[in-house]
Image 1 (spheres, rainbow, N blue to C red):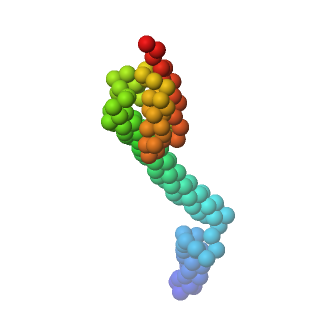
Image 2 (cartoon, one colour):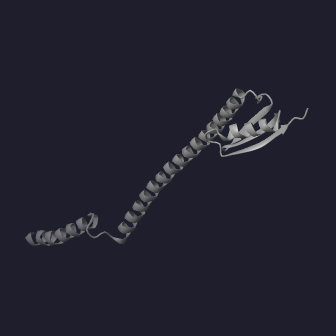
Image 3 (cartoon, rainbow, N blue to C red):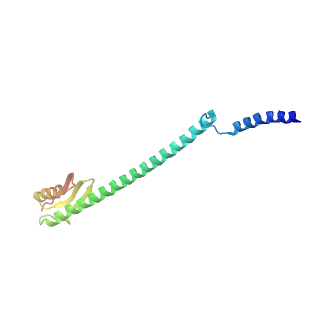
Length: 144
């Protein structure tokens, strides 16, 4: 009976050690499959982070473009208002006869001026407003 126990013990111990080795997670010497799994997991994480960065950069760019467009529109409106105010202040010019439009800092004058000097003065007033890049003077001198 002693021999049977000894034989059983001699068989059981190495078998237990072998089974234990099969289930252990050896992080110092990962298998090829574990290396591939780790690389795939890292790649997924890297792609997710990159996607988040691209999304944030895109949102920032969209916001910047919207802000720039809004500011350009407000600047054009302010330029138009300033030119009209300056024309209104001038006794020889009629704000009712002169149409002022502004797009991207370019002021366009349309309508009627009483004299050639008034036409020139309207252009000079418009070009003196801050933010004006160019004045297109299409005023017509009315002949009596």
